[in-house]
Length: 180
Image (cartoon, rainbow, N blue to C red; front, side):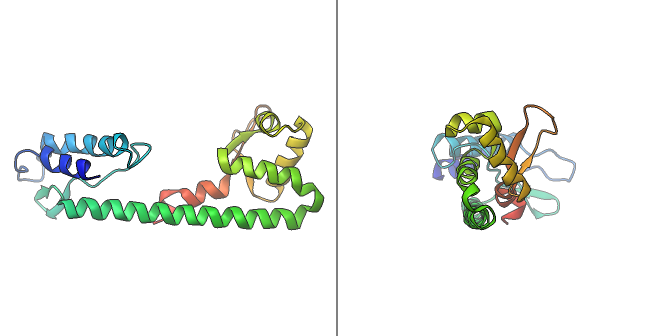
């Protein structure tokens, strides 16, 4: 993270231009590309998904590069948001498991296995679930249908064949706007 923050500071280059219609300096564009890449390569993230605000409007006419403190504050905010999303997803999984057990009784066994697979994969197909879990396709299909009936899974392809099902609650819990 320190390398990424230092790269942002070093790449900013010359002083920012004045005037509203001026483009940001090339260094800001390089920093916008370098910071997520360095975070990913350095192991701080597993994907270059994080976007840091590299130009802030300190004054209406003069965009400036953020300080190291600003960059670390942004990283901390993103980390807190990710943690809240993971906690929400974990709580949702526990609640869905309880709801599944209560609603299905003995039929919950295969549905719980499919739910565990959905937690890992987020999106599955019935043949994939059957193959991965060692279930027959009809058993896996019935388990997925039970999850759909309870509103835990949702069909996302809109097709009659080769349908895929998503664990919609986790998708919503991890959505950036939901965890801010």
